Each structure stands twice: as C-alpha cells, then as structure tokens.
Image (cartoon, rainbow, N blue to C red; front, side):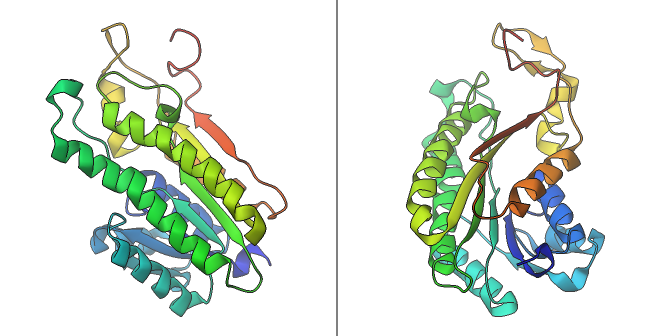
Length: 251
C-alpha cells in the first residue's frame, strides 16, 4: 500500500504539532482525518493543506469514549480504514507548586493526556485488527517530559511518563495484529504552547532562562518519517529537539 492510499488520524490537529503533522501527511498524499475540540481551527488547517478533498475534520473530545468511537466510525465511513494514528492531543496544567494544584486541574490533564490516548489506542486496535490489509501504525506523542521533568509540571510529567507505558504495552499487544506502536518525544518546538520558552522559563536551579526553539514543521517531518515505515519496522522511541535546549547534561 502506498502513502497515496493510506489513511491517517491526527488528534489535536488544530494547532501546533498536530497541525504540522497533518499538513506533512497531506502533502505526502495521505487521506487525513483531523480531530480536535473546535471545528474552526480544523477547517483552517484543511484550507492550508495540499488537497482539501483528502481531508476530513471531526470535532472530538478524546477524553470521552463515545466521541472517540465516533471519530473512528467517521474515518472508516469516509475512507474505509485506518493506517496511521498520530495520538497527539494533550494539555498541561498551570505551572504552579504541586501542593497548590487542584484535583480538577490534575484530572483534566490525566483525562486528556492519558485516558484520551488509551481510548484512541483502543479504537485503533479494534479497527486495525479487523481491516484488510491487516494492521497499522500508532504514533504516541510523548514529550521530553516523558524522560525529564520541568519544575512545577507534576501532572503533565506524570502523564507523559505514563505514555511511555502505553507505548510499550500497546507495542507488545499489537504484534499479533501487525500493529506497530511507537512514540515521538519532542523538545522545544515553536508552537503556541512553547512560546513562553522564548521569553524565559523556570529552570531546575531556580533561574529564569530563554531557551532555543526549533521549527515545528521539523516535527511534522519526523511524524511523516515514522508513518511511512513498512510495518515490518518500527521506531519505538524517537526524540527530536532544539539542538541547544537544556536537556542533556546539566543544561
């Protein structure tokens, strides 16, 4: 099957990394279903894409099981199958001391970043194991926070560590269905969420420092590379980051 006939779902596709990935997939010939909570931004991304006739916007709340099922049902109804899921939707909590974080703030991050990702994986498995040709690929958006936390980020960091567990377990469980599951960990891509890094962000030693950013379209190309692999191969963990950001070593 060529990329020109493949079908991809991108969650959180209305902005940032999801937008970049959706546009990269469309430019490469994929039929792409863009999922996100608001229909307006999804339509704007489709208008920017290479071929609007190959794109479909499906407003989706990934934390709601019925909404996720409706997303996959709409995809299969429109395009017949699902070859790639880029499991990208995610949120953070306010950057405050963990003892001040409310239960509602914690639950919101867990519901979207962890439960939402599980619900999408579950629906992808149900479709991919039943379709012909069998199988597909799932790419989970982890984060460099899946390895190393920032100060005041306990909810986001905990869920991104959990994403690594989802990736490993789903990769193992997907073998018998020819479902390849991998993870992309992104550091300092220039998105709305990351703009605070360009003006100064709290470091582990208590200093405030400006951090380098990279073009978010580089991340889109990384997702495309992973998506294009034959199912006999899998990039289980892929890290792409701004070269000079503080991550390795001491900063």
